[in-house]
Image (cartoon, rainbow, N blue to C red):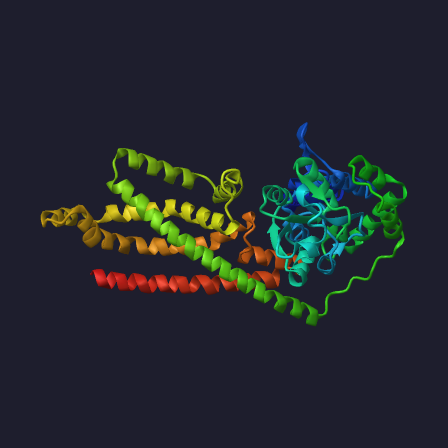
Length: 491
């Protein structure tokens, strides 16, 4: 009897042990395939396979550990958080060696040395040779990188206007189109952009030096030390040099770097003093407040546009002829049926050949026109919810259709529409975080940069949530007051 009771449990435990042994034979490593060659990319001949120098380095690490590599796709900005929560064991995808990252995670020894280089339009190669010569001009880079920190420092000293991106493709296309005057990024990324985008020139003198590392969870130092041993061995036996030469990234800087990285003992990693962490947090609060102002201004302006356009669409669908109703219905269905991110990309990048919209204007139009489609359905439903008997009575009294709308139908429809309209306003306030994809630094984007620079989401996330609540709760309260007053005025 007892055997029959415990046999299922024994089977489950046996399967769990087999799964654990199978996991021990796999090295799960995370990276972002959107980074492209030569880092990590899908093989054009077989998209189910990956290629890139980081792919081959990860494979060598796994081989040295007696495991087989298994890739986990993750957004570049989320590599640190994902490895800390255990989604994979090691993160590698052009991850830069920074003090905050070393404090927050278990970092491997550097395995490649890169250089931050300045790329400009070929016509400006003699005009913009250094950061100091770009005073008052727009310079783009990836957020949360060494280049971004360098540009923030140059913003204070040289008056440079920093533009942050989430990917390394659009900075160079914007440079070509004239939205930027320069781009500061890794020499590997710059070389790839030069092949892809004509009319650009990379200045030969590096602005700064950096290194790529692998990152593991803070408590996973034992595996980190084994990975370090593998990396040092591959530096000594020429394997890494062979990989880098294959991908065209070996240069004159690497031999000296290999000699130092392969022989130097691991630096002692210490947590930042509490006073330093406090000063870093306090230093970011003004930036978060400024980003909050951008968020609320953008949200209010976009909602005003959404209300105006939504009223026009709703009125056209209720009072217009068949052609007008068909066109407006098509607009509503297309806008509601496509992602707002796609609409933002089309407005900012897709239309750049015809009209070059500033980022804030594109964000304003994108959010406003998107929410106008949803608002129009609210207003149309509110207009059609007014009882027909009241409309007929008003017409019998000799009121024109415009007077009926202004005096009878409109006020009642507004009362019906007010609750969902205010809900949409709060939703738009939060959806404004999407505009960071077109370089607008609003609250969520600034928080993301903050978190990347201190190596933790706890404090930045709490501050961001508090600021969003501070903006949205008063809006909800105001909406409730308006709804109560309007209801009392129309009864």
